Image 1: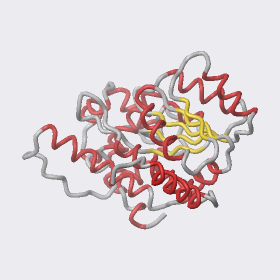
Image 2: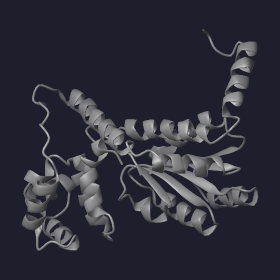
Image 3: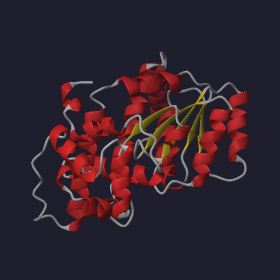
Image 4: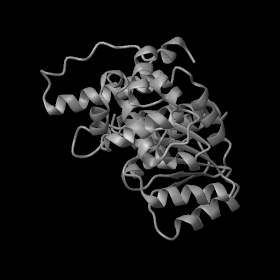
Length: 282
């Protein structure tokens, strides 16, 4: 990883949590800390509890789970290892602008993570090798799965979109495995449907390698993912915004193309056919 990513407050926090078995409540606290990485060293346990939507004793238990005597010791450690960054001047922004600024920060965090391209490159190799390639996304993540599958189908010979739940979804995964699938790509966004967790567990039991794009490395789908790529969602509006997961999906498409030797030829063939049919208005 490059020095830019290593110096990111969010990246340093992420490293602190790695290797610890956290409860769902503790994962929620960790996720909130990563989202507000620059502010966390200066928050009290009560303020962090309010930020994460948990109780103050939960914050104390979280600090102990990480190996500290209590939250003050954790905060002292954070002040030593997480570099302070200048706070943004948000006072003049209205609520809509604040939502946009928060998404810009999510994209900056994603850029920090992508300073080490190896996880995405590995994901591209795994997905390119799967024939067929099932792409899963339910409820809030359905549009992310659809967008990826739409473009991936232009370069990959067999993409199978799984964006509707129900009793048939396990059957469709089994059919993909029988057809030769070796991997599954999942988009998982909050609120996380139980059906997605169950489906990923089934996919792994069926022998598929699961690559997941999720809002956090601590999302409920993490334990059923072989490779998880995090991209935070915005929570400043009535409904979450998912610019970073969408962009990460496009980056994954690029990595997929890099590992498909005939990707460029397929794209050129599509463009020629589209021109012959007058498909697009220029």
